[in-house]
Length: 291
Image 1: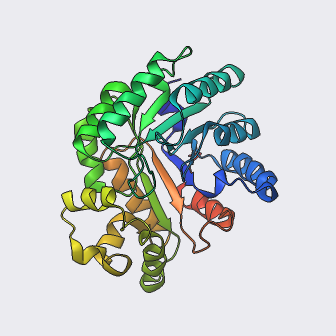
Image 2: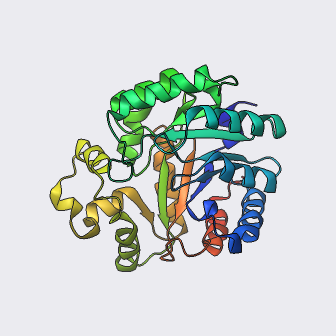
């Protein structure tokens, strides 16, 4: 089975699934098994995750692909990551997808020359005693250079905080074969005022990070769009909200633009205090990922 077939068209992106709080360990495992049963093809571990976080979900499920979205190249030694990935592959073949990325200057003290550093990290993964094969890794890529590197040195790209227009541009940059799996925020709310308020609450944390604002500027957004958690125009472009029909329509736009797989982040206002399991169930009813 190819990677595209394994991950399918829909996945779940969640920072909550990588929590280190022992009190929620059991619920995380239970939730992962439920997401697999609901039909989602991949579980993306957000918020600077690790191979160990991935192992927990792999062991709690039977077939779903578990991916890191992403491992920060500044926080995890490449040789150690390669060794952990190889061990997990031996234990559960074909279940784990290594997503790596350069994170952000505000989040990494050693941040410098992110493109060159990412390329060097890939070199180190290749040079490890047990290398991570290119077909089992993806890059967090937004700009043209990183997208080109993803196409050349990995199975594809996992862009975060993007629009359907960016997805079309990324597909053109990658070519037809690599996996394109953008993250997409979903608010299961039809009221425009409440939906946009939930969108702004989560966007505000990203609009202070230059990597994201630079990417959005390339798409035609500007300073006015970045104030106060984001303009209506920006929120509507990067957050899918509405009733079932509108949700299906908007997610389909990303597939039509060239996404093979969409990693859906349910935003319900709870932040990272709990797993949005009710939202995941509702989303499964709307999208019918088993379909």
